[in-house]
Length: 144
Image 1 (spheres, helix red, strand yellow):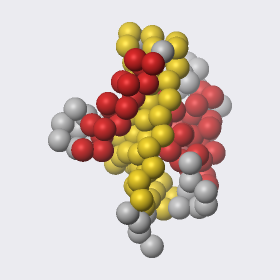
Image 2: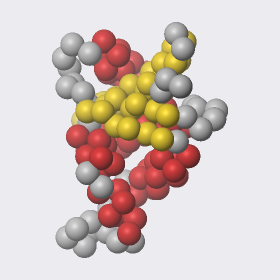
Image 3: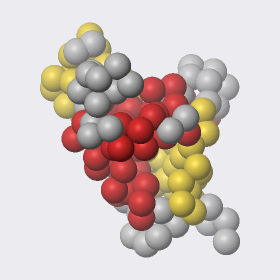
Image 4: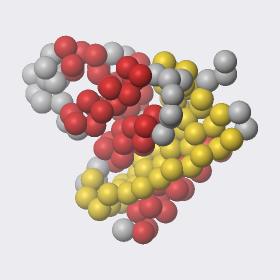
């Protein structure tokens, strides 16, 4: 069975400041776009929230390719930071509390429900879906 593709992006005007996020889900020729914003947030929070929103939109266990231009998001999962943070009671390698813990906990629960592979894409380049996510996230900021 072909995996669901999810493209995500987050944006912030000021950091912290007004933020927006977007996820585009693609499967079997069907496209679903979801987006939202937060009046006071950070870019990293919006990047992680976009992944949470995209995975939360799935209605059953899926194989997923999740594309993001966020090194923070992709590296946390693919390089094992998230697993280490959980194992270390939500402390970083240098003993500090993990930032955005509640979002990482939500993402961790969703990752346990699905078979997710994260793919790092170059931001603001030639990836159509990443560019569309970025535009939608910025449009959400304009609404705030």
